Length: 178
Image (cartoon, rainbow, N blue to C red; front, side):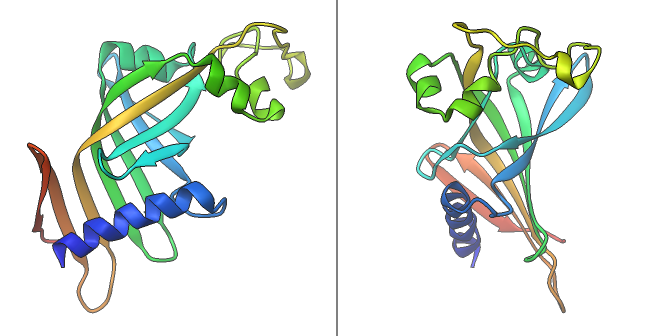
């Protein structure tokens, strides 16, 4: 049953790439800055089941990139409210890459998200005072490789919890008390 749980997770992440309303499409990414946790919701853009890598896109000037430059360890949280499953992942940022080709493949509306004159989180006078660059962009691809996965499913009469760790090239799992 342990392998089945891990394979179920992999299947859900694959579905999240093609189903816009899948609960795993948006997930919480946790980084650390000045010894304090920082959480934000991000969009799953790609997933590799073989390497257990999760890809997101961001503005290269964002606080998450700054945090990752100091500490590449992250925590990722997926939650499915319908199935009452939570998957917490410990991972390492293994790629921070500015990618012009990938940027041009994005829809024009999405490209705009990476062309603000000011960095994300900068103070502005009003919502309408955001301005955009014409030629330049700050698009960045981030890839996180999982090293540990903590699966929890709330189910009656018995909840299910399992911990999986990457050992060399294999994932080793064990059941845990929920």
